[in-house]
Each structure stands twice: as structure tokens, then as C-alpha cells.
Length: 215
Image (cartoon, rainbow, N blue to C red; front, side):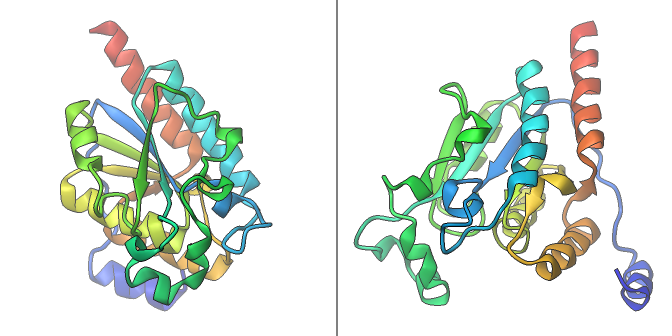
């Protein structure tokens, strides 16, 4: 963040900290092969994001916290893509049943973990994600995935609006270009979620697990 932006945001009193709950879930947005494989038109090398996300997933699995994945996929006629495909024609490659829609196998998505198919940027738009979170008693979300400037930002905005305090481990989100990635992390931290290190996110989960074991 440049000094002028910092001054403007401080004057606006952006960047307060959210009060976290005691029933976290991990939400992994769109770390499908279409986004994590550089061979995909939409893809980039997100190996470091996948590796960091695996650290978060390991901590969540250790404590049996809910884990939800999302992926984008369209029917072959592409009519379910609506206007989004006009803005980003490369999304047409994300056809249901294709490899590009599959969750990156390095994340070892398990049968007990939920996969939500979405057609828009936010993980909430046109999906039952809110019901999934509420039905499992979730009161805090750890948000990982791609891309920072697109689906992560859109989902972070909706998480705030639906009343879920959210942590975004900075190592666990990625984008195709560094500029949009960094700019959106600044704005997410300022207005929508708490951007933290992966170590801080894991420490939070382990502290919740310790409290749970004492209860």
C-alpha cells in the first residue's frame, strides 16, 4: 500500500479487526485444475497457494472442522454462463465433466468434504453455500483459493454481508498477476475480512480446538 492510500484509508477508519467465533470452517474457492494448471487458458502456477492451503486443510482435518470446496462449471451449451462469458470468454473451457472443473488433486478433497458447483464469482451467488454453513453451525470462515481479484474478493464481500467473520491467509490466495492480487488484498483487509498469515490462521484453529477439548 502506498503512503497516500494508507493515509486516506486511515482517515476513513478502514481496517478494523473482526471478532472471530468458535466454530470455524475452511472454504477453498476455485482451486480447480482450470485455475491451478498453467496449461489452462485461465490457469497460473499456483503451487505455493496449493501448498499453503494444504497446511490449513491439514489443521482443519485434524480438528474435524468443516471443509467446503467450490468449482466453476458450465453445461456444454454455455447458456448457464449468462453474461460472464461475454466478459471472460475463456470461462467457456470450464465444462462440467472436464478435467478443468476438478478440484486440484494435490488438495486431496475427500468424500466427507463438500464441493459446491457455482456459475458466478461469489461462492454464494446461485448456490446453497449459506445453508451449508448455517446447518453445520459455522460462525467463522477461513477463505483460501483463487483468484484474489475475482472470486476471492466477491466471496469475501458476501461472507461479510451474510455475517461470517472471515480470515484470509495471504499465502493461501493467488491470482494471475501480482498487481490485482496485492491491490485486492489491501481492499479486502480494509473493508471485508482480516488478511493474516497462514500461521495465524492455523493458530486460531488450534486454539479453538483446544478450547473445544476442554469443554
